Length: 148
Image (cartoon, helix red, strand yellow):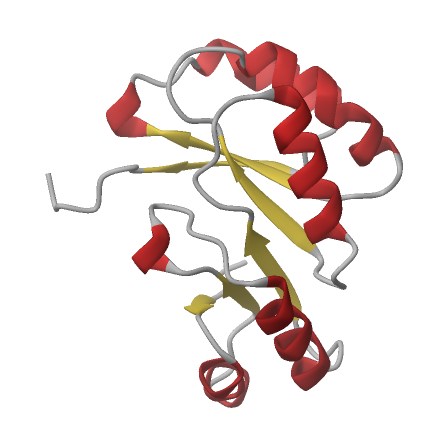
């Protein structure tokens, strides 16, 4: 099944994506990085405007791989009414500790997609661990958006 994901930065763009038939409305701010996060106020506005008519995903930002930080920001974003959180696994350090820290959030129903970065030598050995931890998906992206 083919679906269309449209990334948006505000309510107006979200409504255009909805009207155009987007299956997933993805909230992110590319001006803030590969997975730049929108302010929570904007996320709440978009969630209200969409009103449950489409799946909404959101990023949490280009965060350091610090388990407590990821858990706190992910939990905070998760209560905004979005359906899926996209969380970047940047660099090569602390990935397993971060997966472990996020497991309680997943166990409580939060749907998280792990984003690995092709231009940062991703550890594909994490895939079975992400699956076991309950991540709902894994996405391969690039951290650098310079076209390389």
